[in-house]
Length: 110
Length: 116
Picture 1: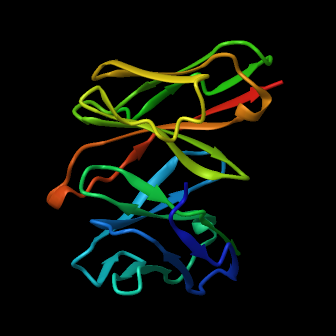
Picture 2: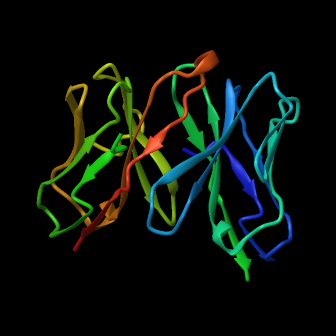
């Protein structure tokens, strides 16, 4: 079963704008990961933040983690049409298992 | 590395037939995962293996589903008999422990199964 809930379920923005997606989870985690899925493809790992970290950056991506609220957010800055995809958060354990959220569908209009 | 390889990419079969999906994980990865993705239920973990041993199969929907990993480079997911509600995209993923036991998973391209 899915342990995470993502908000919003769908997000539509213009190219150049920032996109923020939120994720909540229910159980204890070792790390929180974000994945991207283009239509008809497998998921691709974007970024991982450990439970003892609060913020992490990778290129145009910024992830925050608040373990007290069991929540995370993914910010994509200066979005491009090529960022159009579904984005999933996943809570990770120390023994390899991930539990994925339902995903946010991001559409970036050129 | 070629990444995770899945076959077939598409499978159309009739209800009652046996279906076998195949996966070759990335060399050196010691974890292998099978997922199912549908619009209604999202991405569900079916089963995962560590060093070829099944660790958690609680996500396998029923006895019609079985999975094996006879060696480190090959796994199968079998559905017998198949039903229309099994129609979904099935993903295989593999991983190995990174720093601090944080595992990034690498997904295959998926097998789109249609049962008529």
